[in-house]
Image 1 (cartoon, protein in one colour):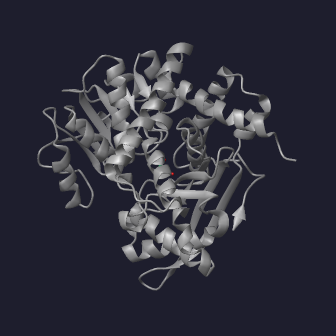
Image 2: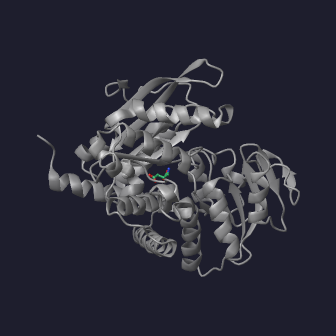
Length: 434
Ligand code: GLU
């Protein structure tokens, strides 16, 4: 295991997703300037606390051994244990993990949760491995992380290409490697577990529902109805699907979708559940859906619509497509989908962005509910979960919207200011050890 502390920010030139870290740092500095953040706290928050990189061997189905690289970056824990997902994707590297960990710090703080921020994952393409191989990879990764995760220290959750099954394997491995008396008391080492294994009813839809709620709150503030609003979604995984599901139920119309395999459109509307059912028998892909037409990938973001929901990877809206985007609202289901250059163009064009740390925070709020449920030995009902989520999302949205109007700043900067101020307060109260 290698723990990097000195080599921070010595980022490689060949990063698969360019500039995730550059974006989050620029967003942070711009808000820090606005609130005149104390220089000492700026220094602390500019850098990650811990960076764990593990290399571990796993036996493949054919008997060969493959060595994988896993990451866990712990950005800040001033407000509580590190919290954030584990992503299985070829773009996972130290730069991505750092940026995503920082976004978790701001997200947890903004949502008023007792958590800091962390993120990690494994650089791999899960479609190339069998279920058995993925299980062994996950269990061996958990073992390699050892005490770097823990229910009161660092609590992973699902992210891209990881799900409740992945979390169940992590929880089982973690608990199985504790001393006997501590085994069952540790299931809240991860959130996003299956319903039957300490998971929270509704955690699956929490992020997408939160995205929908933010759009609903935005519409209400602008005296608009969701009825017949056209929306497009990039990514039809957990977030994209559930956001679309709730929007459709509220009268909006899905007109274009993009996933890792291609893009489709139908200006008369795409039925969300029909599309979801199609993906289930089409290797997870939307391509070829009979009730829609193929669309060139480059034309997706510039499709005619009112609302655009990027719910896949980072850096998707850039200076290349931002000038031609038709949507009036961008609701960021993904983390970091709009880069700084793209954002400037959108803001100049009067397009509103509901920023990731607000828009997709339903997931980590749901995780917090699950963690509380496990810690207190409770089982919450779905209706209770949804109404609690609704209340928390509304509080966050109102705080951000009001602050942005008061200070005449965009929603992202407002969200960052609120998030950073809460962390600043904790540092001011506690001081710096020793
Ligand atoms: N991966 C999700 C996110 O980016 C959820 C994190 C969590 O629940 O800890 O917000």
